[in-house]
Length: 447
Image (cartoon, rainbow, N blue to C red; front, top):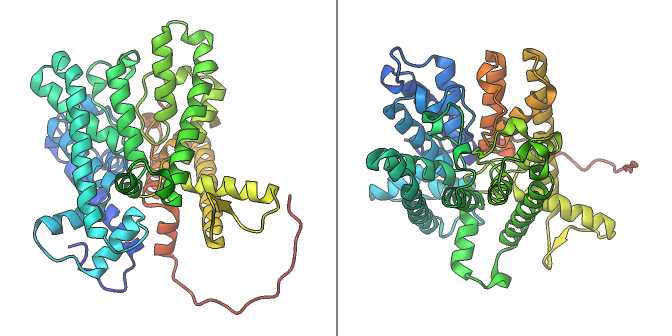
């Protein structure tokens, strides 16, 4: 079992090995003949890419989910999405709890790392809270979606579609079964449907703010002053990104001539959805290839930023962005430390935030450049796909299925990097060294 590894293995290594093991199992299952609708089964690369995308809750696909994968294959995908979204360690802890076995200190330590909890104490109780909340939220989402899908597809098929899309939305995965209408169409047939739009957007936002944030809100209710600093930063940054991007899409993008066919209500829904979905969800209600260059650029920024720590979302996280912005404000005000809401942030937090931002920027840019050179696709399209991959979003301009194997491998690495976390992956791989003696200090000029 996951926790019977040797004691010297760090939580970070357990997490990355757990995700690797899940991807491998998913790949094997998706290669079985029973997993595809056509005889013969999927190829290794198709299965590996899809299993990685599902486990890393991304949503990038090389085959249409509804028409290529059988019901069994779709069940494998939704299981990978559920485990990948909640975290391999969380699910392992849950299984141990249901089996009535004792949760040791090592398991609690790993769980703390997995969900970005502030402390080990109370971690088992929080795990129980996460499981109950997830079941309640996904169940409510499935119920709401069933009011639309059951009349449209029939009771049993509609119920399956409701459950599948509720889990996919809550886990910020972006996998859909709407290919039965038109391949790779996502939710474009529901651009004017407030029930589908509202339910899916709510699931995406709730899943993307993080398990620890839920617990903080659940504990303190509307007493905002009692929230932890992390919760305050997450809520304000998330609200700021959603409102500003929604205003941009409504007043600029969907006022352009190519969207004249949309009614006012459809434009409002589309603007809201396009503001929410790039935050690592991967659904779309409009044809993304019709977006203007400015809208593509804004979408790329939103995809890279991603969700919040300890959530089902990827990206370099809202707290990282908040720390960087607070640092800019501190420099402008000539403050010696980064501050927010009457609290001073440790210098180590700023160094980590800067490192994460630079890592994501380098990998996103380098990946897009390599894909553009290897497959000869326009650079803006390649960058859109790499932003979608490293942000574990799943939005696509339609070029992913036609890319070569080297480009698919690049996207696989970016999806994995974006899900397990940049520093988690690096700290797990790089051996820890003892701190060297203090070196002489010397100033340089920046800016």
